[in-house]
Image: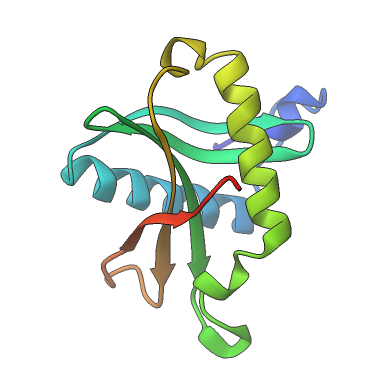
Length: 137
């Protein structure tokens, strides 16, 4: 049985992941596999801090890459890219700063980039990797 790590951290041990969480994890696995095939070494997954979250952190050459994974099975409410709001970008940037100050401090000297992997349509549709999708400005 898959468990929900967020629920476990909150004290609900053994809580089952919701279907949405399971789909999200599957999407992040697809994105990580796609990035790895393109030469990105994944350093961290699903890092949470107060006010933000990082889906994936990786190294692409010497570049430290913070990756937001966005999934949309149906474009009815806009595609996956449309779901990356200014608030979402702010939260990813906040989490990246937090990660660099803690777990990732040994990588703090590296140049950083914010990428997005879009997963749209059926699982057989290849991911779209948007490098330098947004800036920390």
